[in-house]
Image (cartoon, rainbow, N blue to C red):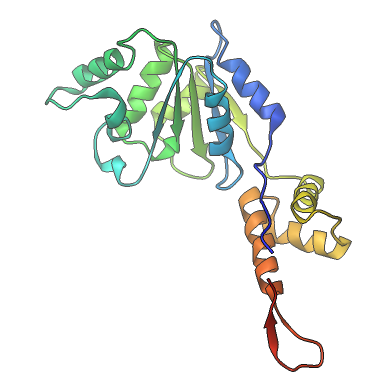
Amino acid sequence: MVFAWPTVNRDDELRTVVSTLRNRRGPWGAVLTGEAGVGKTTLARAAVGAFAGERRWAAGTESARAVPLGAFAHLVGVSSPMDAASVLRAAREHLVADGADIVIGVDDAHLLDRLSATFVHQLAVNRIAPLVVTVRTGEPVPDAITALWKDNLLTRVELPPFTRAEAVSLVESVLGGPVEESSANRIFVMSEGNPLFLRHVVEGALEAARCVRSPGSGSSAARP
Protein backbone atom coordinates (compact mmCIF):
# COMPACT_ATOMS: atom_id res chain seq x y z
CA MET A 1 0.00 0.00 0.00
CA VAL A 2 1.27 3.48 -0.89
CA PHE A 3 0.72 6.26 1.64
CA ALA A 4 0.60 9.90 0.61
CA TRP A 5 2.89 11.96 2.82
CA PRO A 6 1.38 15.40 3.46
CA THR A 7 3.25 18.65 3.28
CA VAL A 8 4.31 19.68 6.76
CA ASN A 9 2.31 22.74 7.70
CA ARG A 10 3.86 25.38 9.91
CA ASP A 11 1.08 27.91 9.73
CA ASP A 12 2.24 30.16 12.57
CA GLU A 13 5.76 30.43 11.17
CA LEU A 14 4.42 31.00 7.64
CA ARG A 15 2.29 33.91 8.82
CA THR A 16 5.30 35.39 10.59
CA VAL A 17 7.53 35.14 7.51
CA VAL A 18 4.90 36.48 5.11
CA SER A 19 4.27 39.44 7.41
CA THR A 20 7.96 40.37 7.27
CA LEU A 21 7.78 40.59 3.47
CA ARG A 22 5.31 43.45 3.88
CA ASN A 23 7.41 45.23 6.48
CA ARG A 24 8.67 48.40 4.81
CA ARG A 25 10.20 49.93 7.94
CA GLY A 26 11.69 47.10 9.98
CA PRO A 27 13.43 43.88 8.96
CA TRP A 28 12.34 43.19 5.38
CA GLY A 29 12.21 39.42 5.21
CA ALA A 30 13.32 36.48 7.29
CA VAL A 31 16.10 33.99 7.91
CA LEU A 32 14.80 30.49 8.62
CA THR A 33 17.18 28.47 10.77
CA GLY A 34 17.02 24.87 11.91
CA GLU A 35 18.57 21.46 11.52
CA ALA A 36 18.40 19.48 8.28
CA GLY A 37 14.95 18.09 7.58
CA VAL A 38 12.80 20.40 9.71
CA GLY A 39 11.12 22.00 6.68
CA LYS A 40 13.03 25.23 6.07
CA THR A 41 12.96 24.98 2.28
CA THR A 42 9.28 24.04 2.20
CA LEU A 43 8.40 27.00 4.39
CA ALA A 44 10.62 29.37 2.42
CA ARG A 45 9.02 28.35 -0.88
CA ALA A 46 5.55 28.75 0.61
CA ALA A 47 6.39 32.26 1.82
CA VAL A 48 7.96 33.27 -1.49
CA GLY A 49 4.96 31.81 -3.31
CA ALA A 50 2.61 33.96 -1.23
CA PHE A 51 4.30 37.15 -2.46
CA ALA A 52 2.16 39.15 -4.90
CA GLY A 53 5.05 40.26 -7.12
CA GLU A 54 7.69 38.39 -9.07
CA ARG A 55 9.78 35.71 -7.40
CA ARG A 56 13.44 34.87 -7.69
CA TRP A 57 15.12 31.80 -6.20
CA ALA A 58 18.76 30.98 -5.58
CA ALA A 59 20.43 28.20 -3.64
CA GLY A 60 23.85 27.63 -2.16
CA THR A 61 25.52 24.39 -3.22
CA GLU A 62 28.91 22.81 -2.72
CA SER A 63 29.61 22.96 -6.46
CA ALA A 64 28.58 26.60 -6.94
CA ARG A 65 30.57 27.57 -3.86
CA ALA A 66 33.78 27.46 -5.91
CA VAL A 67 32.45 30.14 -8.29
CA PRO A 68 32.23 33.79 -7.16
CA LEU A 69 28.56 34.81 -7.20
CA GLY A 70 27.85 31.28 -8.45
CA ALA A 71 24.52 30.92 -6.64
CA PHE A 72 23.15 33.95 -8.50
CA ALA A 73 24.69 33.38 -11.92
CA HIS A 74 21.33 32.46 -13.45
CA LEU A 75 19.70 35.62 -12.08
CA VAL A 76 22.15 38.46 -12.54
CA GLY A 77 23.84 37.80 -15.88
CA VAL A 78 27.27 39.13 -14.91
CA SER A 79 29.96 37.43 -16.96
CA SER A 80 32.59 39.96 -18.02
CA PRO A 81 35.71 40.35 -15.85
CA MET A 82 35.21 43.06 -13.19
CA ASP A 83 36.40 43.86 -9.71
CA ALA A 84 34.20 42.65 -6.86
CA ALA A 85 32.57 46.03 -6.22
CA SER A 86 31.65 46.41 -9.89
CA VAL A 87 30.29 42.87 -10.04
CA LEU A 88 28.05 43.46 -7.04
CA ARG A 89 26.80 46.77 -8.39
CA ALA A 90 26.06 45.29 -11.82
CA ALA A 91 24.32 42.33 -10.22
CA ARG A 92 22.05 44.57 -8.14
CA GLU A 93 21.17 46.70 -11.16
CA HIS A 94 20.42 43.67 -13.31
CA LEU A 95 18.20 42.11 -10.68
CA VAL A 96 15.85 45.10 -10.52
CA ALA A 97 16.27 46.39 -14.08
CA ASP A 98 12.61 45.96 -15.05
CA GLY A 99 11.37 47.80 -11.97
CA ALA A 100 9.03 45.00 -10.89
CA ASP A 101 8.33 44.20 -7.26
CA ILE A 102 10.29 41.05 -6.47
CA VAL A 103 10.98 38.74 -3.57
CA ILE A 104 14.18 36.73 -3.41
CA GLY A 105 14.47 33.31 -1.81
CA VAL A 106 17.93 32.02 -0.92
CA ASP A 107 18.13 28.38 0.15
CA ASP A 108 21.08 26.91 2.07
CA ALA A 109 22.79 30.25 2.52
CA HIS A 110 25.45 28.61 4.70
CA LEU A 111 26.84 27.17 1.44
CA LEU A 112 27.13 30.50 -0.37
CA ASP A 113 30.48 31.63 -1.67
CA ARG A 114 31.89 34.79 -0.15
CA LEU A 115 30.75 37.11 -2.96
CA SER A 116 27.24 35.64 -3.03
CA ALA A 117 26.94 36.07 0.74
CA THR A 118 28.08 39.68 0.41
CA PHE A 119 25.53 40.18 -2.36
CA VAL A 120 22.71 38.92 -0.14
CA HIS A 121 23.86 41.21 2.65
CA GLN A 122 23.92 44.21 0.30
CA LEU A 123 20.42 43.41 -0.95
CA ALA A 124 19.23 43.54 2.65
CA VAL A 125 21.21 46.63 3.66
CA ASN A 126 20.05 48.59 0.61
CA ARG A 127 16.49 47.22 0.86
CA ILE A 128 16.55 46.17 -2.78
CA ALA A 129 13.91 43.48 -2.19
CA PRO A 130 12.48 41.39 0.64
CA LEU A 131 14.42 38.20 1.30
CA VAL A 132 13.62 34.73 2.60
CA VAL A 133 16.85 32.95 3.50
CA THR A 134 17.43 29.47 4.92
CA VAL A 135 20.41 28.43 7.04
CA ARG A 136 21.17 25.00 8.50
CA THR A 137 21.92 25.00 12.20
CA GLY A 138 25.34 23.67 13.19
CA GLU A 139 27.06 24.55 9.92
CA PRO A 140 29.71 27.26 9.42
CA VAL A 141 27.93 30.36 8.12
CA PRO A 142 29.49 33.34 6.30
CA ASP A 143 29.69 36.47 8.45
CA ALA A 144 27.66 38.38 5.87
CA ILE A 145 24.78 35.96 6.40
CA THR A 146 24.84 35.90 10.22
CA ALA A 147 24.83 39.69 10.08
CA LEU A 148 21.38 39.53 8.48
CA TRP A 149 19.77 38.73 11.82
CA LYS A 150 22.44 40.06 14.16
CA ASP A 151 22.09 43.52 12.61
CA ASN A 152 18.29 43.21 12.53
CA LEU A 153 18.17 43.35 8.74
CA LEU A 154 15.97 40.24 8.60
CA THR A 155 13.86 38.51 11.22
CA ARG A 156 15.26 35.20 12.42
CA VAL A 157 12.69 32.40 12.61
CA GLU A 158 13.91 29.19 14.25
CA LEU A 159 12.16 25.99 13.14
CA PRO A 160 12.28 23.44 15.97
CA PRO A 161 11.63 19.71 15.61
CA PHE A 162 8.08 18.51 16.20
CA THR A 163 6.79 17.86 19.68
CA ARG A 164 5.66 14.31 20.38
CA ALA A 165 2.03 15.33 19.91
CA GLU A 166 2.76 16.97 16.55
CA ALA A 167 4.76 13.97 15.35
CA VAL A 168 2.06 11.48 16.34
CA SER A 169 -0.65 13.63 14.76
CA LEU A 170 1.25 13.69 11.46
CA VAL A 171 1.82 9.93 11.48
CA GLU A 172 -1.83 9.25 12.27
CA SER A 173 -2.90 11.51 9.39
CA VAL A 174 -0.66 9.49 7.07
CA LEU A 175 -1.85 6.10 8.32
CA GLY A 176 -5.47 7.16 8.57
CA GLY A 177 -5.93 6.00 12.15
CA PRO A 178 -4.56 5.98 15.69
CA VAL A 179 -1.09 4.68 16.50
CA GLU A 180 -0.44 2.44 19.50
CA GLU A 181 1.27 4.16 22.41
CA SER A 182 4.38 1.98 22.24
CA SER A 183 4.71 2.55 18.49
CA ALA A 184 4.22 6.29 18.91
CA ASN A 185 6.95 6.42 21.53
CA ARG A 186 9.33 4.40 19.39
CA ILE A 187 8.70 6.52 16.28
CA PHE A 188 9.22 9.75 18.17
CA VAL A 189 12.41 8.58 19.86
CA MET A 190 13.88 7.31 16.58
CA SER A 191 13.01 10.47 14.62
CA GLU A 192 13.69 12.95 17.44
CA GLY A 193 10.74 14.92 16.08
CA ASN A 194 12.54 15.77 12.84
CA PRO A 195 9.91 15.75 10.04
CA LEU A 196 12.26 14.26 7.44
CA PHE A 197 13.55 11.56 9.80
CA LEU A 198 9.98 10.91 10.89
CA ARG A 199 9.03 10.18 7.31
CA HIS A 200 12.00 7.85 6.85
CA VAL A 201 11.17 5.96 10.05
CA VAL A 202 7.52 5.48 9.09
CA GLU A 203 8.21 4.58 5.47
CA GLY A 204 10.92 2.15 6.58
CA ALA A 205 8.51 0.48 8.98
CA LEU A 206 5.83 0.25 6.31
CA GLU A 207 8.26 -1.25 3.83
CA ALA A 208 9.44 -3.80 6.39
CA ALA A 209 5.83 -4.72 7.11
CA ARG A 210 5.23 -5.55 3.45
CA CYS A 211 7.36 -8.66 3.79
CA VAL A 212 6.24 -10.77 6.73
CA ARG A 213 6.22 -14.42 7.62
CA SER A 214 2.89 -15.91 6.59
CA PRO A 215 1.21 -17.69 9.53
CA GLY A 216 1.92 -21.42 9.34
CA SER A 217 3.58 -21.23 5.95
CA GLY A 218 7.19 -20.92 7.02
CA SER A 219 7.82 -18.59 4.08
CA SER A 220 7.91 -14.87 3.49
CA ALA A 221 5.08 -13.17 1.66
CA ALA A 222 5.16 -9.69 0.14
CA ARG A 223 2.16 -7.59 0.95
CA PRO A 224 0.99 -5.02 -1.64
